[in-house]
Length: 355
Image (tube, rainbow, N blue to C red; front, side, top):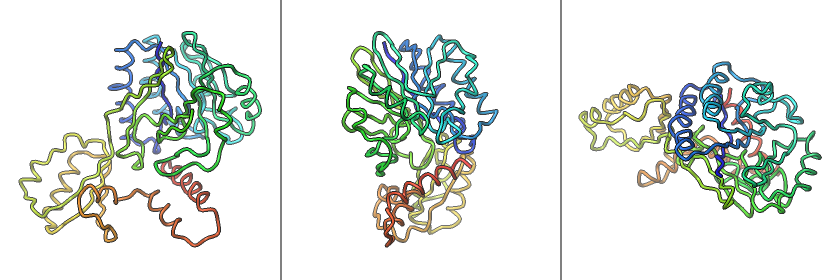
């Protein structure tokens, strides 16, 4: 039997941004559910952070989650097992108040199983798998006890393990020790959106892009085979963050008219200006992008410190906010642990994105 693995769906992300919301729905409608139905997959494990904001959920988002995910699973007899992630819980020291319980604790769907207080064992096709919700101060002792006592060979959870990439290029320097999970053949986790693997622990990575830091990175879901114990990655072909290098050296008005913008609706665009000799052509270019009904268009003109000589290097050097912040922290002459400062800023930045 095969199990579809989801994690970090973040329904309501970016303060219920309409374009992000459409992007999430499109993933389930065009990629995820068609694959499950075509391959007769009847079980889903969701490894936490079903919803985005810890303190509340927008009514429209809640209805959309129900319409485009829960109801479809129910109508197609798909069993769904969901564990709580840190974004699903209200308090930081306890999981007791959480979105899973508030939205679906009354067992609206017979096919839905939610776990938020401590690890549980779930058996699928004679394969025993331990599911571990977010581990906090209140449930830490019970969680570690359950992990130590289980004879399951596979663990899936929403874990924060030191030494793994939180975002590309930034290792987590806090959290649990990987040795805690050494007994398992394989450990699969949500929480960090960047996919990475070290030893027996694999961070699966998010299913779709949510911020500019996701741009250019593979996103998708995974399928676990209970017989072979192997995990297969299914790529999400949809990308909504686009970088465009602008160079009007040989550009004409006809080139602007022929510009294909058919795939730019509801996407986020960053225009990297390499050469702008003709302001009129540039305005026509921006008007053309605006007409595409893109969700957001940002123009990067001030790249005097960039030494890039071709378009690919320009794209790489037009950095996102967190990259710039990390470089600034690295340049500071301070005694404070710079990694801890980076972690604090990352948390503040992610919180700011949701406001």
